Length: 83
Image 1 (cartoon, rainbow, N blue to C red):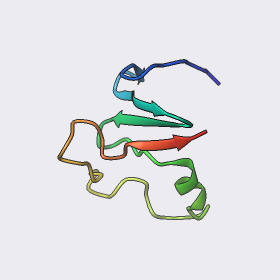
Image 2 (tube, rainbow, N blue to C red; image 1 turned 45 degrees about the horizontal axis):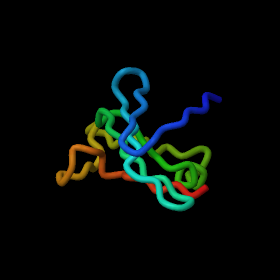
Image 3 (tube, helix red, strand yellow; image 1 turned 90 degrees about the horizontal axis):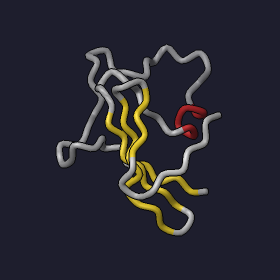
Image 4 (cartoon, rainbow, N blue to C red; image 1 turned 60 degrees about the vertical axis):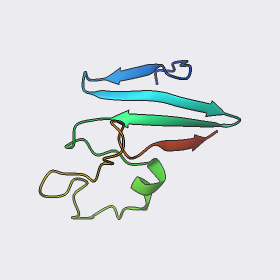
């Protein structure tokens, strides 16, 4: 596991096309913004863990589109992660 320290506004780039931006840190929470191509599924671990093991449901809809927010260039899934 790679462990990195980032401050508000700093980013991590994965594979050249996925950007994770630290939007805000407050108390025990970190708000992250994730920008990725529509073909890259982004799920919180607890959602992934709830999926049945033998599910035939794809992580990406058959048309290749995920719902994204039109309000912001940062993906709609701004995730608050509690420590």
